[in-house]
Structures are given as C-alpha cells and as structure tokens.
Length: 98
Image (cartoon, rainbow, N blue to C red):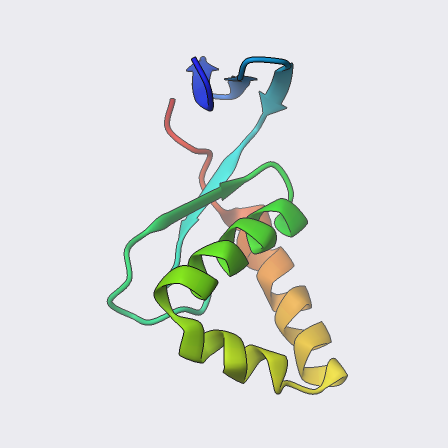
C-alpha cells in the first residue's frame, strides 16, 4: 500500500511500507491557485504551507519548467512577499477530500 492516504475528511494517515504518518488537516490548492498557469488544474496538497510549496515546486519542475526559471530570478523581497501572500491562501484553503 505504498503512498496511500486513508482516513476521514479531516484526518489522514499516509501509509507506506515503513511508516504510518498521521496527516491532520491536509489542505489543497490547484497549481493555478498557487500562482501557476491559469489553465493548470493539478491539485497540490500539504499539511503546511511549506509542504504544499515543496509539492508545488516538484510539479513546476516537471510541468512548467519556464516558471521555475522565473521564480529563481525573483529577488529575495519578491519571494518573501510571495511566501507571505501564499500563507494567506494556504490558511484559507479547503481541506483535501478523503
């Protein structure tokens, strides 16, 4: 059962071969909602804003490499503003469906 999520609407357990990790209040946003292309509806999930950003970056590297180049060119101030704005989006995001 590698990589499987099981649980109720607000509580998830990530099941893999080695660990059973409690996942509470996992949130979800689409790539577009995170600032990706308006037409990308791929859903990212995470228990924290940082986890969702990491998941989103993996998606960007695979699906939108040009956006990775743009993000890497951002100033520290611009990236800090993006992160602060994203935290607000994450806090308001719906919980991931079970």
